[in-house]
Length: 279
Image (cartoon, rainbow, N blue to C red; front, side, top):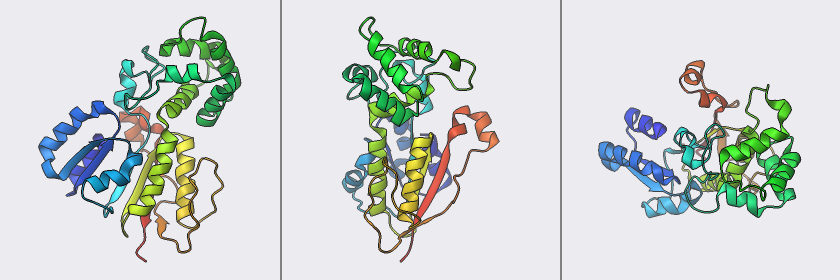
């Protein structure tokens, strides 16, 4: 709710905030008390944006859409959510608290499927070896906590202990993305935004890993007429006869050193913006 609070404080706007995490409701209530009619919170997935704005008596968006992707600090810091490889907790990773957990996902996949997820969503170079280790060990001992999973990954990535990133970083990212179907939601959001933004309105995406950023970058290039769709992860855009969007920042906006100093997790953030053109 940090971004929402800043928008409401600095700008005279009406803000519709969407978050699939039910634990955010308490923070949203405080903003509602302070900003009243200017703030509306919906506990849902932003892939349902089109139906959400209709339910709130809107059909098109005049100001803009800001999407802060990925996992929040609140989620990472809560060991019971299972997002962090630095905290021991249940192997959950669900943002909404509903659906299949990361543990259930791991037990439902065969070795080939698990390796594909680790590679596609985490760029994990040792995806096959890690998948093989997990499949081999998951029935010997119940794989139900984050530290148990970390232990298995470290057995495969013994030589990675001197590297800057934690050995489990990529695997945890991949399992989180798969558990929450994050790329599916992102693709839907991009497609919906293209339809509902009015001229002058902007679409702002904040990404935190290279896979998200590639999808957003190529989609923005596509709708601004820069290039054809060549990415397998990207939603297929209908060929545009007349370009309706322009890219505002050719290169992503990165966090300042001051921002990184106050919040180390912001170091991987990239912000990209497009604007609906007046035609």
